[in-house]
Image (cartoon, rainbow over all chains, first blue to last red; front, side, top):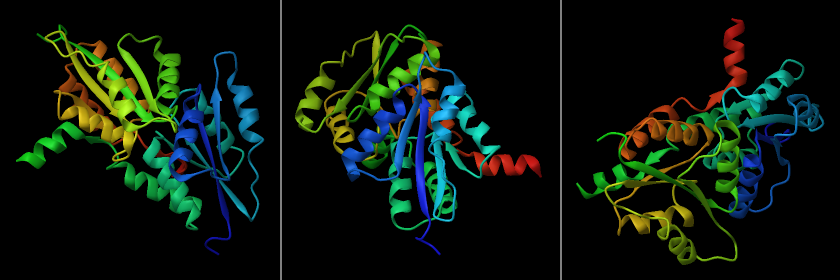
Amino acid sequence: LKGEQKVKIILVSHGSFSKGLLESVQMIIGEQKGIVAYGLYPQETTDDLVAKLESEIILDDSEECLFLSDLFFGSPFNAVVRLMQKYDLYHVTGVSMPLVLEAALARNSGATAEEVCNKIVEISRDSVKDIKKLLAEEVK
Amino acid sequence: LKGEQKVKIILVSHGSFSKGLLESVQMIIGEQKGIVAYGLYPQETTDDLVAKLESEIILDDSEECLFLSDLFFGSPFNAVVRLMQKYDLYHVTGVSMPLVLEAALARNSGATAEEVCNKIVEISRDSVKDIKKLLAEEVK
């Protein structure tokens, strides 16, 4: 039933990007349960990151896992893809602030992981805007 | 002449998101001159941020300024829009890792600020991907 299954959101990136992103998202919509952030730091291997991410995965009838990674290809992305071969995970790459906000709000409204993925890919098409051009068009 | 004018890139966000983003970008493509990051923190006002951003603006024949903000609307975005009323600035919102990487590489190859804006808006259309769906399609 919609709303009965929780979606855990795991942000993954090179370095501190994902942690900063989560902190900034929480400045806007308050502290969020079930959203965590992991970074791959220079002294670590991809195996280290895989182990940390794997410890977050609990897949049962009450929870789905959605990974949001920084970049198509690259070690953090590859760590998630490796876990996708073992577990049934959701994974959207190219994460930004509008995407995490939308994902958090959709999830909190009872959307399933699949619905959250569809929603954030949909809004991503219009989430990047050239403001100089927009303002110039307004003047016309 | 192309390549003679430098493009300074200024990342702006709520909290530490922009600083984490810059750190992570530099993990991938090395230290970058002329890319800086500013955040608006809970104890600060939008005026404080405007003042800090304004101190980065040098507009002469040798430099253009491109702001990359976290979110359409919100205080950091509004701080940049306020400065756009006073200076001739470039501004794209909805920043993510692929966008900053593309902006840095385009700029380093001699693109003008306008060309960088066009390029990152263009690649943004395809920078967010649902990997679960992509992998399912590959199997078909």
